[in-house]
Image 1 (cartoon, rainbow, N blue to C red):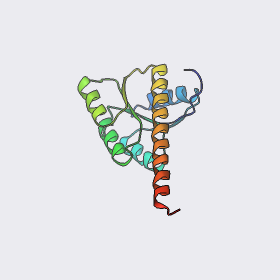
Image 2: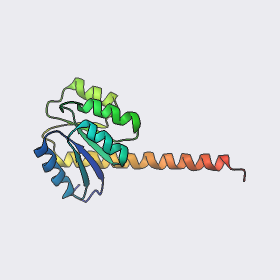
Image 3: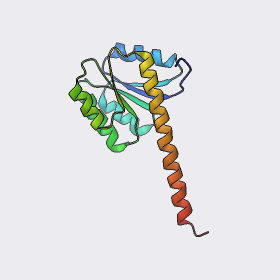
Length: 146
């Protein structure tokens, strides 16, 4: 998995040191990473640009990871979201999955596992966008009187 992934990732975590360290570790592997320290900031970024994967910490002050996930999914149902937690519970991970998270990883996160999950999220997102494009083309063709 050491090949460069070339994915755009939004990393959301209130711990500055963790955010900086993980950002550097991902960028070294060819990912373009945007960081956010609050849920509100993440939502604003997602509204302005597209990401192949969004990695959100579960426990954050103010708007927590679950609420951030919920709000992103409301406006961007195709968003591929991976949740991270240092104190994960089965209840919280189940709730995150019900809200639309693709996966749930424990901190300290294994970088290879995270890269694998980001690659899977990117692949799934590409398939969803291709399907959406095909459907739009089919609708255009059906609406034209050739």
